[in-house]
Length: 113
Length: 112
Image (cartoon, rainbow over all chains, first blue to last red; front, side, top):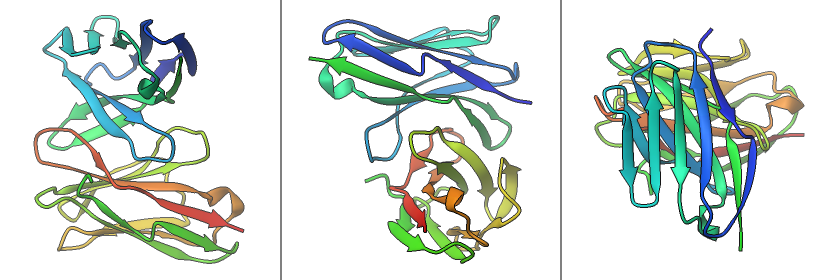
């Protein structure tokens, strides 16, 4: 069935370093790839997304890359700050009138001051 | 504030009982999604509605059911509750055409 694998499950980085989280999806028809950030005890919130007609998208310190051939997409956070500490979820979605989402299992990022 | 309202925020009940969780989507959003998040776990997709009709079903137990009403609010019914049903239940809505999910604050269910 449809599946999204996310790695690593936990990631610790020093403040100022970069963090990379990777996801692989199984459904080649997926065409929308969002990333959500969930701070402790709070709701997930969209931080960046990319559609299948684009290979890379950047928003300040965060960027997402997509390799459709490999069915692989990644989140890159540069110059990490303590407030980046959270759980990050990737998702692959198919727009077939409405969006059907499959979420990855999440990555707990800890930024050490 | 995402504009998605979930009630109740917290609920404590006993095994074998039945509860109803309610979700009001953002104004104009036709899609409603329900997710279950157990402690330190990911977002397990339960069910999706679009304009009153069921659109997709995930790993939703037979003891669980949901519906979306004509005013677009949705309810998730959980019956014959077990200890393992203790979790945070999120509702999310999505505006037509964009794909972005707006999550509510969640309903934390504790089954004792």
